[in-house]
Amino acid sequence: MEKTFIPGKDAALEDSIARIGGAIEALGFTIEEARWLNPAPYIWSVHIRDKDCPQVFSNGKGATREASLASAYGELIERLSTRYLWADFRLTSALNEFGHVHQSDERWYDVDGQWPEELLDEHCRAIYDPEGDLELSDLIDHNGGDSGKGVCALPYVRQSDGQTVYVPVNLIGNIFVSNGMSAGNTQAEAQVQGLSEIFERAIKNRIIVEDIALPLVPQSVLDRYPHIDAGIKALQAEGFGIRALDASLGGRYPVMCVVLQHPKDGGIYASFGAHPKFGVALERALTELLQGRALDELEGFPAPTTDMEQVTDPHNLELHFIDSSGYVGWGFLSDKPDFEFADWDDQHDNAFERQALIELLHDEGHQVYIAEHTALGAYACRILVPGFSDIYPADELVWHNNNQALDFRPVLFDLNGATEEDHRELLEALDQYSVNDQLRVLEWAGIVGDKGTPWARLRIGELRLWLLLALSEQEEAYEQLGSVLASGHLTDDERLLYRAIFAVLELTVEGKDLSDFEPSLVNYFGADKLALAKGLVAGTERFPELGKLDPDTPTQGHRRLMEAYAKVLKGQLR
Image 1 (tube, rainbow, N blue to C red):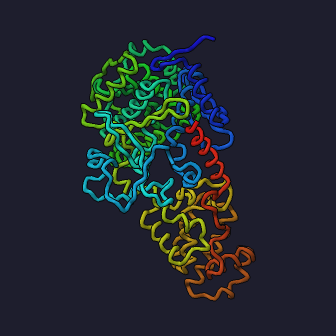
Image 2: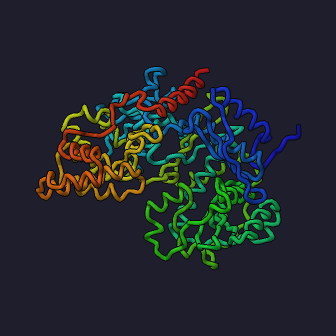
Image 3: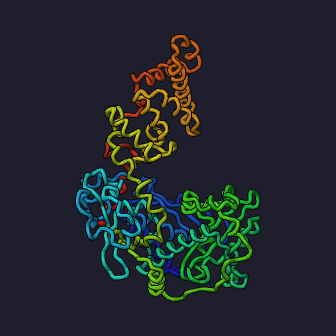
């Protein structure tokens, strides 16, 4: 069989697919190719997933079908190896069977002791705890933090001197998210990919925040890459405005950009790609543009704006990280670039490029920390560059830490059995942390919901309402109902119940005798709904259809999630 080699890869695509796909299959996963897209020549993407557990999935992109499938398998093994696919969920039950939650080399630290010397170094502490206010208890992760074992941390090697530094799982999840993760045929290939991704996102943010105008890639340069040029011209023929831009900021960083403007709504979508090889970086920017999107799914991106407060808002930058759907400033689209085009390129091997990227980061005053994973049959790594590869600001650890629900899981798992004090503390926490009313309660708690069930449908706003009613806070419940009724996710049956509660509360708060309005209320809402509404307002009924949950297997979906997790943890022991 003829083998296909592409720039930047140390093995043929066919060999990568067979080896990594085989490693994933050996773990017990059955992967299906759920969706293929080829909206333009040399622009492919694929979504793959496990048949038994939909949370095990990945996406791939490339200039060919084989390249995109290899990309998807690489992303999947990276996310299995780093456990990223389980980063949002409660995993405490894994301790009983495997003796660890995340990795076999994890360490736990008692929150009542002194700060351990190996837990973060001075460089990291200066970035994430400059005032010395961070407590160990702030760094308990929400995956296994309710085990009572304290702070879980993973070993990373500091590249400047080879020293091992332990980094809390909580900090990794809150600050870096998925940035800097990679897998590859070799160590050098994977690390070049991970480092390139870090540069891509950091320089992209700088360009957007500073409203930097980028130079066009000359047609004479595009002519060197016929398949990229063909993809661009095909999109232009469909009516899209497409511009290939040099995002290297004068040749310093290995980053490229492709901008799409929709002909109907004028929306702007800026896609970035990075790699030391110019052609690879540009191809990644182009294929990223349409990863998971058909041509008829490109409407709805915002038009450019002169409001730079809106552009630099952290939420807008978060949107750019998630799916590039954030705002960009008009200055970014200026025909007067802030840098001249740089015809940069690096044709060295991956080992050389890896070292060059790390040296560039060191030259700019950064430290690079790498954790390597090989136990699942392929090389994967996670790279952290504090202060540079951060996706969220350091104050997330204090104000928006993802462990907010940790202390309240026992209350959530048994709402009807909890005490009045438990209910009040939970309600106060929801207000203190400003938890979004539209967030699903089980998502906040790190639990997979079973689609269509009352627990899976329950939002924070509705939980607030049930807590207020359980605490006999009728006026506050009446005010909260306005927010609940404004929600667009309610079924007709749910909306009818909330309207009935609203009517009963309104009359009760006004001191009216409900019996005077009984016929009309029954006519409006039906006898059963009215009886339930009256019981909820009176406190004789509480938390309707929200039964007690088993902490280890609260839902069938969570059981399947943990079964998939067990495949990975068993696989690392082979």
